Length: 192
Image (cartoon, rainbow, N blue to C red; front, side, top):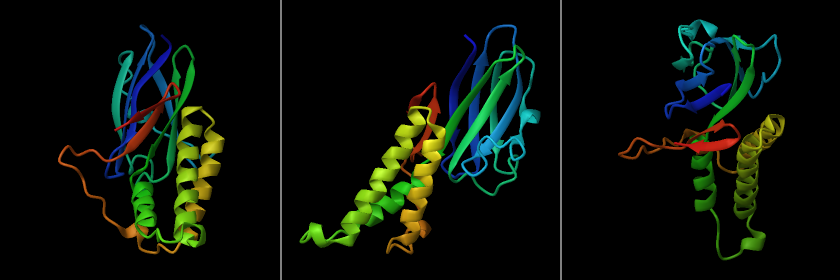
């Protein structure tokens, strides 16, 4: 079985990440290292969150708070490296898309449908969507460095668009409490 991650998702409020992992019977998870998209794979910048592990069985279910990671919130892409007592290693990623979908909705709502070829908002919306989809696909394929590059281009698109208030739009939470968060588990995109 090796390492089986069944959940790795950023909460809708961006204040925590939930992680559920199972390892081969008789093994335990011995280390968890956390990176963001700005610190990915730099051993000097990883955050060791191994203290959150129970370490008593092959099943771990934990919540990583932003405070545990030394952050105020989990914006961007986050990676955790899981090491077992064997030792086996796996890396998984998560990315909350809520703030990006809000910007995308705002860009689309500002499109002037009377002249698509001469409309900057249309071009910004298309470019934004291109980078957002490329980021998600890169995560699914396990091409984490590409996902980071695409995210950086996505952020540049936000910063240079005519949508100054886009980042300040509060999302409406459905009665089911679901917005949009993705986790990449075994190269499969999990959406909540």
